[in-house]
Length: 146
Image (cartoon, rainbow, N blue to C red; front, side, top):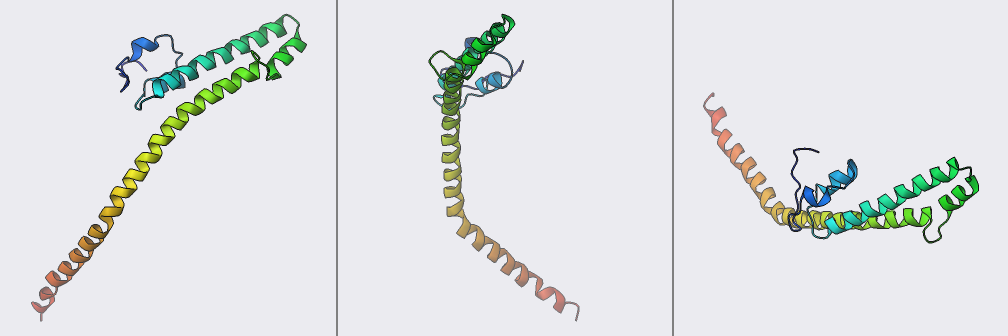
């Protein structure tokens, strides 16, 4: 996203610190850092995804070498340094980013509801007063046409 400045409250590192980050949704997420802790969690997500992508290349290389059995074993195994374990690490890292954002969202919603809850009685009273004043203001008008 050229021309769009990074919004960061974590030291103002901006785009330069993330020059090696791939484009797309990862780039968009890293350019939209707004809460404490998100930058580090998002960086871990990108790093974990890079390992998962490397695994994809490994699987394809094994297949190209005629080692389909090794490719399948590497692909579906949850053992250490296997594809599914790396995928799980990527999902865990992504969940941490999502959890940080969800926590801030939930807090904002709660704060907003608290603010509105305090205003509801005053707003309701103002609406009743406006309706009453409208009726009182219009009441003399029909008398002028009698």
